[in-house]
Image (cartoon, rainbow, N blue to C red):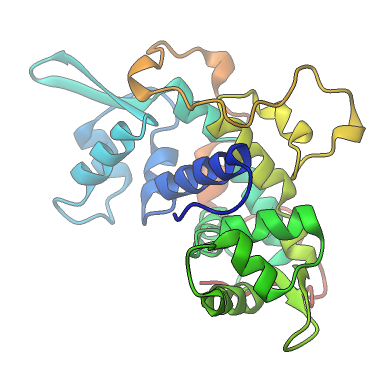
Length: 280
């Protein structure tokens, strides 16, 4: 994404979260990550779990997830190769139930109960709109901002009117509100509700423990409890090559992949949320 006029640490924070979303948003990536929950699998075993992928589709997606540091390929012998999560991939998985919780509360209600995996995919589509992360960051930190001021911050090297297409899309998605043409923009209830998701993604992408999300300077709630250590927004994400290969049972998420592929079991609100955004 283009460099913004925000402070360098904030700009780097937004860029890392955008990169993290780009790792998991492409079609089938989340489903592949969920299929790999549990012991490492041979290619044929994984292919059987994601049988909807056509021949030739699985291999490039696995390679991309390996390059992103979320999946590791282990060659035991020339004929015995397995795929499994890296510790970095395991650390990212708890974000997925948080996305489901947000979608259940804020996305428009479907005509049928949706499996949680579809809730995740619909939500990721909204979060990866062009310039979405930067716009949401600015609105969260500054409450209300005019379109022209947003343009100066988010896309300082472009014509300021270029801010309106992504803004209109975010309004249509239900993440941003405005009272009309020429009026300031602000986060909707759905946009503000993204705080735990974006805060956790920021902590993960900065190499922080996920519980540090509550101390994020924009998306966190520092008053909730004292920070254990200062937030370092510019901390680099560890390179995939440096990830430890060993995985322990304690690092496994509390939920199971069958929970996300099955229909959500949590109670849905009886009435649709007026500010709820559309699905993809």
